[in-house]
Length: 311
Image (cartoon, rainbow, N blue to C red; front, side, top):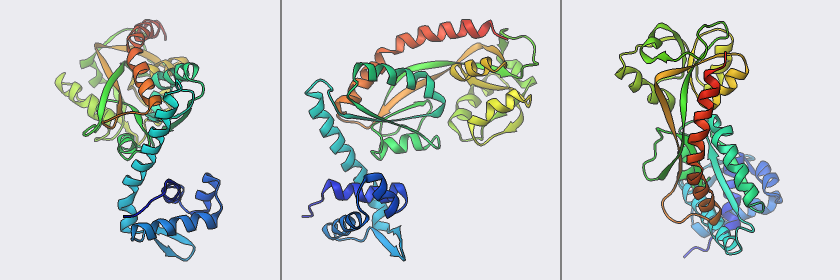
């Protein structure tokens, strides 16, 4: 039976995640010869070739691709075990790995992590931002991150999830628009040129059924690949868009016109993780996030009142 060392697994994942021996060695603070030897030892123990050596490059072999997920699970189990030991000391140490949608970076992610760090200053936190919507759940399933925070809907099959908040959706228009703060009926959105993300994205999948049910056929002014492009286009006068409360607040600070939608639209925020025991740090964060949900509802009411009065 193969005896696989965690250090060898970390070397393997280092090459995969950093794109080569040199970068992996720098990231892991290891000598390149030691890292190369560790991967060769791992291949001998497993009896498979994980990489094809092409000149100085290392290209994942089919067996290497298949080994990524179990390798990340081994690393995650080791982190969980270390955290469990730290938990016996009252979270005097340990590590929390979490991934969040960029749109949630301020609320609730930053607020929750700020409170968590105040209460647990010795826990090392690693926060990742998902490059794509579908990578949120992938990073959690593969064990790269223990917890994920994202808007629903998400492809959550096989994961445990908990609703930890919700954001009201506001219509955001260029600064020269009228009726700032005045609620707009949902059916009137079909009179506006909208800035939208592509079909198949979680944001579009959330809005389209609601608009279809109201008989709204939005007129698309611009379709963008990334949500980060929406607000600059609105501010430039290209069109309007629907944005959650935290993004609407940012838009209002930049002089966009903000209007509540009637009936109100709300998008839920979920915390999700793989089934089974969590590390002490992740378990503490989950409980804190669930306890904070009531506070976030109160904050959203204040947000609606403040946005309703801005122009």
